[in-house]
Amino acid sequence: MILRLATAALGLLLVSACSNSAAVAPQVQVVDLQLLESTVFEQRFRIDLRIGNPNDFELPLDGLTFDLEVNGEDFARGFTNEGVTIPRLGEGRLSVVASTTLVELVQQMRLLAERGDITYRLHGTAYLKSFTRRQAPYESEGSFRLLGNGDPPGRAI
Image (cartoon, rainbow, N blue to C red; front, side):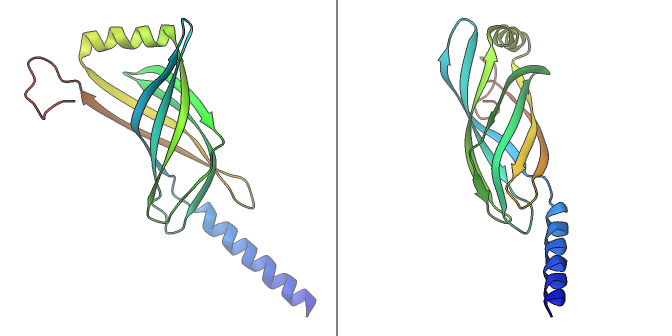
């Protein structure tokens, strides 16, 4: 009897572990960026992220790392151990602190003056809180145009 219970418990554990391994990576997007502090050598930003869960089960995150590239160049990086549980087929928000160097900021200002539009790529790893440690890599990208003198309202940011 005890052997049957142990076998059944092991079977349930394996089934639940297999169902978690089929998880689709979360969708992580930048929704806001604010300068927190600036020194000669480093700038720190608060970046608000929207995390979408395309899975039919909740995703309990207990941390994430990220790298933000702007116009094809490294811009900011960071990590957090903040946890958030994203509901099944739902969204959540998480604020993270990122840092960049003066050189990276100057490169972006130069590119922005030349191009007038911004492309970005955000990528990293979300850490799932579970019985067995799981990692879910993610990536998103996009672009937008800054409002200039010749742009009609509503067509650019």
